Length: 367
Ligand code: KG4
Ligand code: ZN
Image: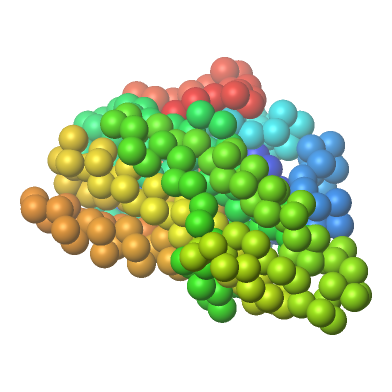
């Protein structure tokens, strides 16, 4: 099979990214992957403002593409096809990447592949190796929590998903309640390292239901309830409270005990993280036992969470038929164009020929 070079573009949320992916025979590999992040900008508003995100894609998009080509030691003329995220994502943010890709496709006369962002998160696991199917993927990102079975020809079957908040959204909302800034996942997991995951008794929503669905909004509500009772857990706790140490009333064992903000927040972060991961791991094992995949894949921004990485790895070792377990390296967990190029490279041939005319944004695209 001939060599094929793909230029991929991703602008679905708050990262402007371009990548060059090369497919040689049955194996696709990322050659360069440039990400211009808007995180610092959105930290000021405590979350992504869609219009601001869209505007901020316009300035860096061409320099990002140039760098991706330069780092891969190739040129626009050398590429065989373009790939772009068409959804799901923010309307105007997606439009910047899609219109750029369409213009390049039109002027260069090269084909353009429309890529589903969620397929991209899964494909981040296939950099430099051929997929072994069927595979079971747990996608955990800011907008999605899904269990997906990837069958032959990369056909996707949605097995279960969150009924309300996504796991990443839960991390982000808890961080906001605790005044830890945006994005919340990395902040919560960092503080969790110093906390006791059994300190606070929190619900494990849907854990005992037989289905493969999730629900995380109740967990966030439990944290809000704790924070309302104990303002010291927020940055706004009064100086007097800070000096005295707060009474943290929900410590396991029923005994109230005094905790400083740091200790209280660390324990709460560790307990929230443990509750989220317990449910994610248990449901993934349940899906695996039902469908007996050859590979188990962790995907999405929350896949960067070190406790989740370790726990899911350990859990899958218990499975009797020994499926292989994969998780992307950290830089491929959060949004990036490399995973979009990998998706285009591994797609069945006939869907590769999407003409630029046909490509439009699909903000609510599902798996
Ligand atoms: O996949 P992604 O980059 O964007 C979406 O497609 O949503 O995921 C972003 C999400 C955010 O909710 C962020 O807080 C979460 O991934 N995240 C983490 C960690 N790193 C990023 N959550 C938990 N632990 C982390 N280390
Ligand atoms: Zn994403």
